[in-house]
Image (tube, rainbow, N blue to C red; front, side, top):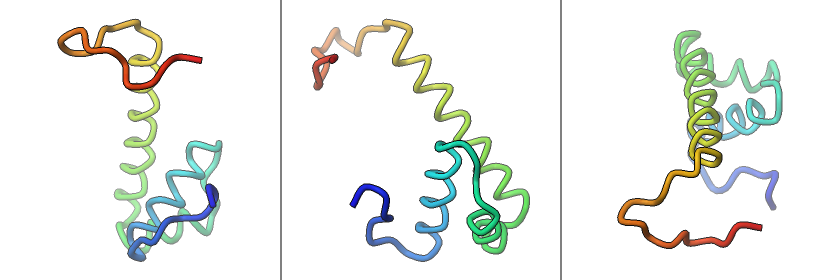
Length: 79
């Protein structure tokens, strides 16, 4: 199902849940603790920054109207 983590290692699942929650608005205390216990406070903060950077780049690329390399056709049609 869409809201369940795929078959992942414990570390991957912690990052997946953390990132999914971050993109939904706020990381739960449980998800934050899971990442912090494995990667430390700095790792958890870096993961927040990484998610934010990903969102920034997605917005820029989705809205800047830049062509694909080699003027390739987009693989998906815009709605």
